[in-house]
Image (tube, rainbow, N blue to C red; front, top):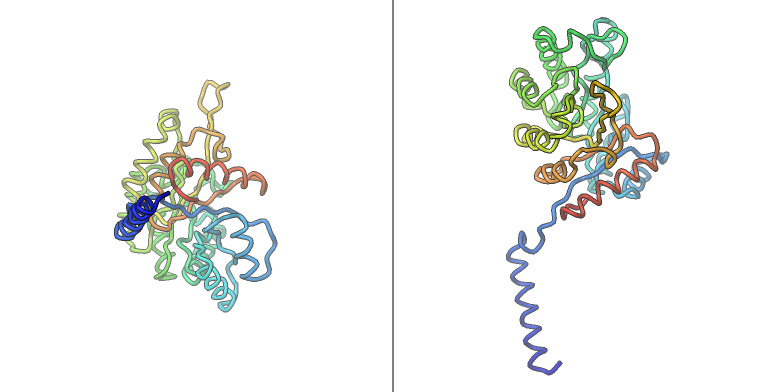
Length: 310
């Protein structure tokens, strides 16, 4: 390269760098999503926990401690997460606070209160539960009374009491969608938000749980878009799963599978989720560490095609 050509190339390169620094959106258009999942490695302290999360390439994690943990230990994990840029996505309060069994309902209420308090103290995005069920034998099962107005009103009342008991300021209490319990649609979730009317009540998004018909199964891309379009401002955490339909039955039967093994439109899911800041996508319900690794690889491969970093 002669001297004139060299200087011309250097000037162009310098101009390009300067233009990029003045136009950061043009310089880097890559979006990102915080992917997370369970940690199988046994950890004894915040440093080991951070190392285990990062070893999986996760930037989000389930709450690493349980209710009843000392405030000092909670604070240590919170500080370690912040230092490592890990978002604690959620504290699970899985229980049935509207159970027809009064003892079970009281225990579930207490679990929700304690779990929400933990989420607030450690700075998790949310505490999550289902609304509950009137099923006397299965805490999360279907029942004829689950979707009545009386049950809706009870869910609103119980949720308000949980929030009033804790008075969270740093987290949100959320209810995950279920096919046979409130909220079972975008509309019913909006109805709950309006009825509960509390700034710390939010949305836990699991679009797979809303797929209850072949129309929604095959049209899940539009379902996902509708979820994010109308519920987006309230979403605090997401679950990433997948779904198939059994073809050897007269009536439709749906089965949950690992991400990438069903029809869930992850291109749309990731595109919509990437528009929200710091909302994690958490994998769940898989049976082994190897299955989580495979699911994460699939989700990341879809993200790579979309220029979304996971």
